[in-house]
Length: 260
Image (cartoon, rainbow, N blue to C red):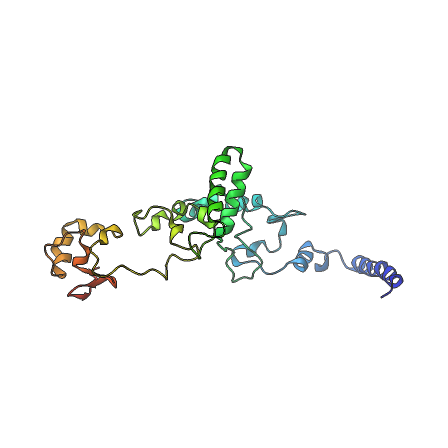
């Protein structure tokens, strides 16, 4: 199309739209803000935010987009998030959009946990806080050590600086026997370690990694557990006397046993 026709077409198109606008009754759906918002909507909101579908300004700020301040208006006092250890970090974070994605459809869950992003946000906050420069330097030093060679292939150097225990110590099945640097063995997308191979079934050092349940430190152990295994004189720290490495419930001489 030539420049001449382009220059003619633009004002003509604008004129047609203006004429249509003026000819349309004021109460027409076409003239309602919600109608124009729907035209620009990239996709349906999740069920949790569906009630905001006709109110873009509840989340979006003109020119700037989604701002954290808009999220805080609704979620600042969400005790179910702030009082649970795995999610309490939200009280100190000042960015939401990296992990909470919307307009993905009604059935979508607007949460995508990305530990690399969390580390990036944390480092950015430390950089902006003059009182945290020493901590920032320490973490950057750690990242520098791991850069290109993180603790293992399933974790990035940025993720390695996160303090896993802050969110997950209540889930620590090792009872801190291995310390709190979970990233040395675990990945951020799963706790299981496919490469892990249990030591020989003949090992007698179970207590180095395992701690007996509370019931084993009561009369329950001598009265029931030790007798079921046929080891009435076994000590609580002698796991190998009763248990097999296939499962805690696989008892030597008794087979699969689950008392409770």
